[in-house]
Image (cartoon, rainbow, N blue to C red; front, side, top):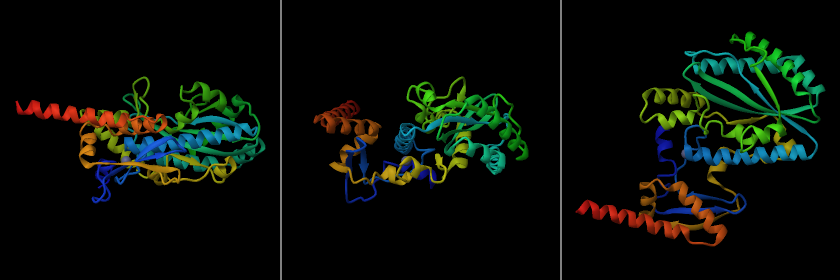
Length: 332
Ligand SMILES: [Zn+2]
């Protein structure tokens, strides 16, 4: 039923008495469909994940901006540990979870961070797969401090404590160089990716992997023709189902002035600034599905709203002509 949910997402209607509606959110400048079933899966559904990650990205960017503008500092910190091909993904993640519990229980860690002006963190779990080393789950975190920190000494301190925590949790210990990486948040925002730091955190599973390492969506894209990828994607989906993509530490959203919104609320777009633009006739909706043009239709709605144009009408006309052409070809 879970796969069924993802398949029906943004395809099957909720009420059969009504057509598919088009909405436009004036504040977020985003178009959305109404009266369609959704799956809300940030990990497995290409459509929901776009909406959710975009919402989370905006949130993260706003939080970072608010913090740095008020004189605070942010650092991008990556945690990883050694792993090998054949390591079980579920076991790796469970072990890492245990290691983090050990890590945050350390008096030394909490006391030193407190002395440095640490105020909270955002954690993103990211995962890649490499033919050489198998599953590679790692964690991007943003640490928020109320003043600036010497990145190198922070790295050595965190590395030692992280290595010890991994060993105590029964994991293979990373080395001093690779276990923890610390980068200045504002510096990283400019250089990590062309989209900025916040995308590195929220869209890691969507982008194409580098140097032969595969992201979950690489696996999903290849799954229809490659059984190995299909098995791997299933492993990933089973383990990640229901997990939150970004976890903010307690009280941090309030501190950074960010409103709490669930994944469901982001997808359903329940904002009051969302207005119904029009209802699509079912025949038109069938054509949009047939030619896989849902994403494009949303782009056109956004464009039309901003520029007061009628490109959606023109596009639907084009689809109808394309379809008519196919019908005539089948007749001859
Ligand atoms: Zn979905």
